[in-house]
Length: 290
View: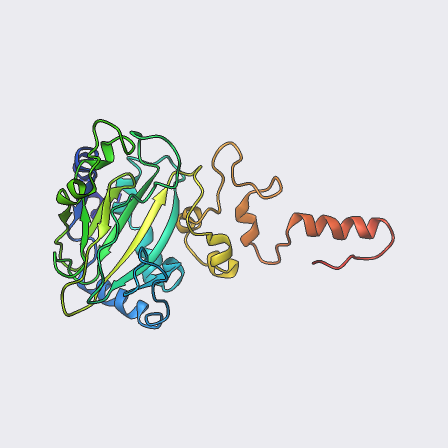
């Protein structure tokens, strides 16, 4: 256990998540790392405007952030975060989404939603994913900071007696996360929340990583989104977070082999290699790989 992890009270943060659905790590990133995040994002901003009201027509997103710069690799497997998430998710949990979000002045508030609602398992239930939102710019009530409904991770499905049925009542319970640059809010995927309206005169930049149970389908398909040769240079922990591992007994296997073998130099998919061998055995020479 390193010094940073030893001085971090993961159980106190976990207790807040269990009770309220969220916690804030005030010192998640230092000033130097925040500057590195800004520099790492700079080449990609200005490339993707929102396509619908949920993404935000005045919101810019940079997807597959984990593969954009080394600094995002490091923060994705940050030791305190891994320790905290390990109290909720099973060993071998995965990265399910990784993106930067820049909310520009004039953006309206999102609809209130959860981040694991597409896992169609009845509530109340344990969250299947957990979300981390890191403030690059400080969050305020005016600039589009995340707004959450404390305790809503414990509610049942819409219509349940423990849950307000009126949309306006739910919105009245929203609490803005007013946190400094470098802080992170960590919350249960079943927690109701939204990106707030940006009524300020400046953009609000943040990034988010989401993590899910090792048996759940991820939002982003990192196998296709990140070139294998790039993944090969990543840390063992990050490779596992991207899915290059087995969840016992054999979920994630590649034609009965460990998926990490796909990162080895010269690797050929077993079906292609077997096709070559079969063609050679028939005396017809090597069949072309398609």
